Length: 327
Image 1: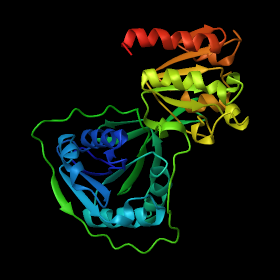
Image 2 (image 1 turned 60 degrees about the horizontal axis):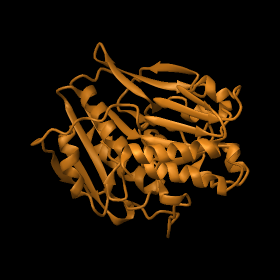
Image 3 (image 1 turned 180 degrees about the horizontal axis):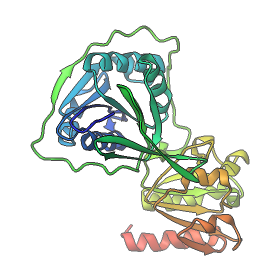
Image 4 (image 1 turned 45 degrees about the vertical axis):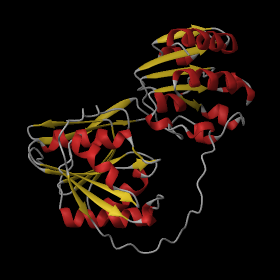
């Protein structure tokens, strides 16, 4: 599919009254793909107007506002219905959806409605001779494949923290269009959703992650990690081993069967470096490993390694960061 000068639609996901960072990253990717063509965005929920300014400044020409309280909480049926109706009305060449828990769930459903192709979990997209070429990891991140999808529309999901976020352009605006979607009542109704991890930190989009493994030894062993994370403004993660041992909730799990993160800084504390865990964090920009075992596999992927007891090293790091950051 040739896209330069084409038409791209972005699903702009929100969370806690804010646009998710990956929504803006997807908008930047869409702008590069469309060139001088049309970039549109869609926002769901009972409150939608406040997002128009940021979306316009970051590259959207038009924003579809699906103002419906039934879309305040994610539901795969209603989200699929709403997006499918917008795609049918707008007729874009491509639809980009954030690769979040919600996006990776309903993107295949939406693509199936059109008999369209889906390129999922992409970490990059480039134009080659006017054609969009997507890059995605395979084999737990050990290799990468480049894909070109045919037909129209093509659906793609974009992994957070991999594509540069566009710089807002002052004075740039987007046309806001109210869109009424015909939604069937969902078969499942969520009455309440509670974050089980302390602070409810969003691991997927965190710029800094402090993560613990079996080496933390207990639930209480995570306390130094939370203190360090508090100083750095970081999210706290864990290996599957730590979750299986009952040291923390599975909401913190990073790895092939957990969350995939790509932070600027990943601090692995007491994590041996099993393949399952590396699949979820090996693309972090800078990796710091702390482990008593000098032969731990985590050191093979780490940019910086500290051989020592995490219960001695982490508090020292916390004190030094407090000094350096004036906290």
